[in-house]
Image (cartoon, rainbow, N blue to C red):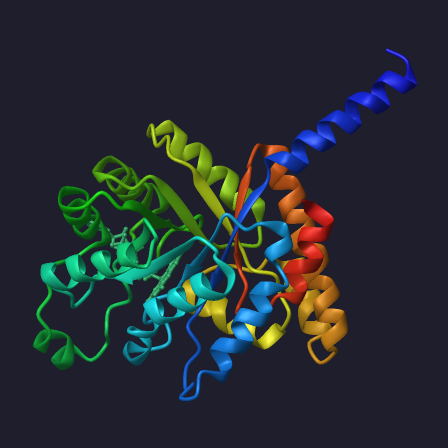
Length: 299
Ligand code: FAD
């Protein structure tokens, strides 16, 4: 093969790669936003990413405390009105009743969407409060089963490349992933991770268990050392030693952290594409700039 045809082949591969990568954006409904200003800011941020045609925007549910629950659909409505993006509202079933779930799904569908991310949610540590709230569900799998039996909405679920913190082992957790898939989840969105090896192992173990639905890697573009550290503690994700040392060293230099975060996310995504991934999920933390730069480089 001569140089010209190799170049042509690479260009063709590149074009094919460009066509292949889909992505979604995760946002959270702004808290303490009585006049809706923060929600308008979020719309402005998302507008900056419209040119890249996100496959969907997923919107967290109650992740900032119970008070933010009713904000999820409000946020989805605004995104639809202003940007006409497809949305996937999240839902956590802990402390929820069957009727509440059916009503929530009907609200999603009235807004013109047909997706839900079905989650259990974190267990409230205040046991007294926990016991006082009626719940028809224990695990996300109960929710997935119920939704599948009672609605035609497209169900996605959460997965954990490093294992969920309550699971005895990664193997046990992947068995739960299999259950979620068998009960009706049609795709899995993963927890954020910074070491692709963890994802590859997870993916291979899932394949061995005949989990054949898409497993979509969650990418957090790092823009702050403290925030990333706190998040990884909360969601039990690890930061590789070399990356941690770099972040720690430059923690007070905003631009340096941004560049480290950008470089790391770009190389994660490029390697994931080489692995065969054609869809990634960005944890945007409601800011567009770094995701914008990454998409410019990786799409
Ligand atoms: P489950 O799948 O129910 O798993 C919880 C634990 O129970 C795991 O250890 C699992 O192995 C075990 N388990 C599950 N089913 C069974 C079973 N049948 N028998 C025995 N053990 C079982 N939280 C929010 O509050 N709001 C959000 O919007 C939100 N969005 C998220 C988005 C993504 C992509 C991810 C990855 C997480 C999100 N979370 C959110 C966090 C999530 O709610 C927590 O991680 C929660 O602790 C577990 O939820 P789950 O749906 O994975 O639970």
